[in-house]
Structure formats: C-alpha cells, structure tokens
Image (cartoon, rainbow, N blue to C red; front, side, top):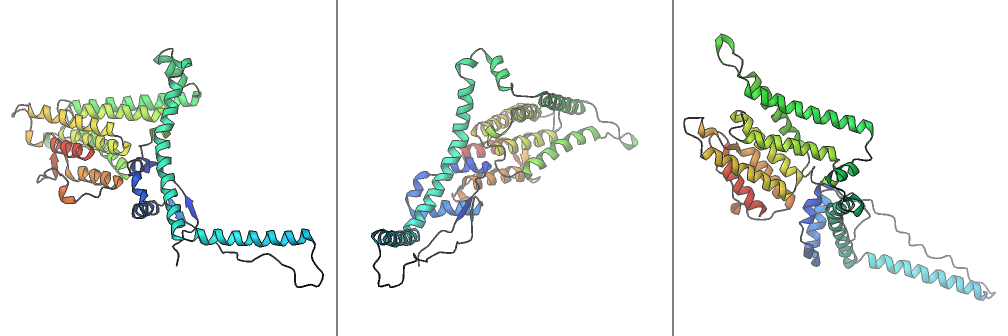
Length: 352
C-alpha cells in the first residue's frame, strides 16, 4: 500500500527560525534525512495533518445505447470527458506513490528552511538597505530621525515612560545595594534592601525562563523600543556582575544568570560571546582580589542547574545528536554552584 501524505496546514513558528537555519540542507537528498526533518516539523506542530478528503471516482456521464448516431460535436465532447477522467485518475495514482509522498515531504522541508533564511537575513537586509540609501546618508542623527518618523505622540510618551522607568529602576537598585542594611531586631544587621533587589532580578529570571526557546531571536519583529530596553538591561546587568559593582554575592550571581538567559533567548552567537566575555572578565577580577577582602570561595560562581538547563535547551534547539559522554560540563560544588570560568569554557566549546 502506498504511503500517502494527507492535506496539511502550515504554521511556521518564528522562534524556531534559528534552529532551521542550522539544519544541513544536503540531508534532504536521502529519504531518511527527509523523514527526520519532516518528523521535526510534525513534532513542533509547524505542519498539522488535516483529515483525508473523500476521493471522487465518478466518471463522466455517457449516453445510453441509442440507434441514432451522435453528432461530431457530441462525440468530441464525450471523448474529452473520458480523457479528462483518465487524466484525473492518473494524477491521483501518481500522487499516492511513495515517490510523490517523499517529494512532498522534501518540498515542505525546503519551504521551511527557505522561510527561516528569508525571514532572518533578507528582512534585515532590506532594513539595512533602507538605512544606507543615498537619501539617508546625512549622518547618524538623520538615520535615527528617519527610523522614528512614523511614531505618534502616544508612542513617544510610552517610550519616554519606559526609558525613565528603567533609569529609575536601575538607580534604585544601585542605591539599595550601596546603602547599609537597616538594623534588625536586637541591633542585628538586616538585609531588607538587598533582598528586595535580588527579588527583582529573580522575578526577571523566572519570566525569561518561562518563555519558549528563542523567543527573542527574530529582532526584525521586535520594535526599536524593545531592542533599546534589552540593550539597557544588558548593560546594567554586565556592570552588576563585576565584583566591585557594589551588589552582594547573590545579586551578582543572579545578574549573570539573567544575562545568560537573555543571551540564549536572543539566539545569536554575538550575545553568547558577550556573556562569555563577561564571565571571563568577572573571573579575572576575582582571581586578582585579596584573600582577606571578601569571601573568595563564593565569588565568581553561577547556579549549576540554571546553567545546565540553558545549555541543554540550546542543544535541543540545535538538534544535537552528540554522545552525552562527550559533552563538557562544569564541576558542581556542594552548594549547587559552578565556576563562571568553567561555564564560559563549556559554552565556548558549545558554540565554536
């Protein structure tokens, strides 16, 4: 019996474009490779199978036997009806063949890969081409004004509120870290301000972790204000991760975890390399600190489970089939932490 493909409904998911770009297009040359990639489409529900349509095999209506001879026009009409019926039957038989089924799978996989390539690169190319057109070469200020020209007054007010809100939040967090903790009961030192700052970052980590993989990968679909907010948050968190930032040890650790989560959601090698650079810079500062200055054994660390969850999510998104024994993993401490330096090396081996 022939292996047929029922009618399908296509629904490409934007956050999977980066994953499809990395697929080996040469694998569709074999039926096994096509089957694997088509199964990925079904598993991600980007291709939804529809109910099989009822086949209509009813032929043309021919006249009953009559003694009177038919005219030439009538004969030509009935011959055309028979030929069209035979052609429709031949198409139906060919479309039910294993070759046609494999060809349809191959076309769907190619269509998905081409959509990912076009959406990630060609759309950005159009934006860059518009920005670098001759009429926009009057300077960076003109480029900025041209890109923001369609904004309304409402959009400007919203952007002003978001920018000032972020600036206020960053200032309050820095001030809370710098202020001495209020005394607790009986004169014992308290930690209310620090706990509040860490709770804010922890809430942001929970929000980023709840997002589907690569939710921030397609920057062409993110408004300019959203990209600007991401840049401001990233710059602030990079400063917090440094040992001399004024934040406590837990705050610096949470900031590095949030940075890694944002980098993995954006799905670009650039942001992952920026996180690796940050981790190595923080580790270098820790290695030069004096032993008596801080609790050095708690500096330069990141949550082991947080790092491994993000690393495994990246491997699943890329469809890595390597043996687990060959994967490099950081050393886990008794407190459930791992070194930022080792985490940076593991991530670098993953992306190189």
